[in-house]
Amino acid sequence: MSDSKVTRRQLLGGALTTAALAIVPRRALGGPDQKTPSDSLGAALVGCGGRGRGTFGGLGSNVRKLAVCEVEQGRLAGAVRWASPDGQGYTDFRRVMDRKDIDAVAIGTPPHWHALISIAAMQSGKDVLCEKPLTRFIAEGRAVVEAETRYGRILQVGTFARYGRIRNRGSIMTHKLLASGLLKKSPVVHIKRGGLKVKQWSGLVNPTPQPVPKTIDWDMYCGPSPLRPFHPHRHGGTHRGYWDYEGGGLADMGQHHFDPEQWVHAKDATSPVEIEAHAPPAHPLACGMWGWVELTYADGTVFVMDSTEWGEGYNRKQSRGVGLSDLSEEDQKKILATPDPKPWPSFPEAVRTREKTGGCGEAAHRSACILHLANIAIRVGRKIKYDPVKEQIIGDDEANRLVYQPMRAPWHLPV
Image 1 (spheres, rainbow, N blue to C red):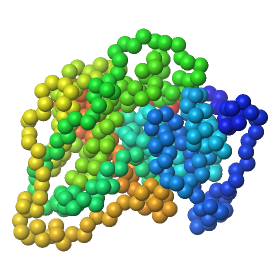
Image 2 (image 1 turned 45 degrees about the horizontal axis):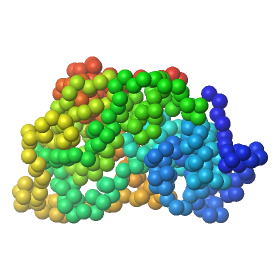
Image 3 (image 1 turned 120 degrees about the vertical axis):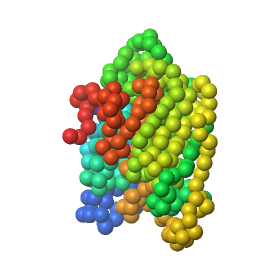
Image 4 (image 1 turned 180 degrees about the vertical axis):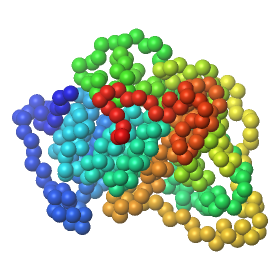
């Protein structure tokens, strides 16, 4: 598709001019130790809808907002006004990646674009702050993690509750205990009740197609997902209700709730091995109602999502934590002698120091896997077993096809 590059003057009907950049980017001065006059980051935002503004702010205050990108012209015009009055607006994110003066990219698009844009940004030498959930399906997450490693970039997913938990004494003790491997079997049952916006972010079944507004590049909006007939409920915040773009309220809110629990319970490098859901038959296109999902890890730890919005509430197990009393006196001393984990840097700090953030690629991918596995169990309507090393569902071809979902040409994950 052809791309349009739009300055504020153009959007307001003024002269077609391109402003010269006022500050030379750091990389143009000969290396990472060189400083620009302001020592600030050149920044861009891709996806200027409801979450865009907040995600852009997550890059920190010491940034030059050089560009915004959005496929809907009204949003683009607004974003140029509030975010980048002296910068440029684009309708194709690839033009943002071409710019050498941009150091960091905030991604506020719907999740079906998160992986491809994150990978493109890191491939072009940019650090990434990506709105949650990190991905739309499991294989995308592994591709993002591999890109983060291959290109040596900083990646942070936009959920930050774990930053508080690493400063909480109870959470620290639970983390050290479960990370130690001293327990033969974890007794933990963590139940999250409510707060998952199931009904709010359910999709419409068989919505009547409507004409595509002239202000929206619908083909680019759909991107790697199927090119469905336009309906306004598929665009804007309600996109969350369709499997093509996200995974309902579970995917929208789940990473907030379970990413911190994943760290607390020392699961940043693994995923559940058995997943069972209680839900009505799922629609193939529209996310719908569900009751609860139980996810069990290899060490016995159980996470439960209880929506409280459909059917009987979860009552199979009772909540159960873990503490020093679960260990022998000798093992208790080992835990008490173990140093506390070091708090993670914020995204702006990580960009400067090159230390990984709390929501780095592997951790963000694994917490997104919790959501994806829960949704797969809901969609196929049966218990599934998962290999967290091979990242495949065991003995269920239908379910496994949801681990790596095809993308619409010409879009594809790196080979």
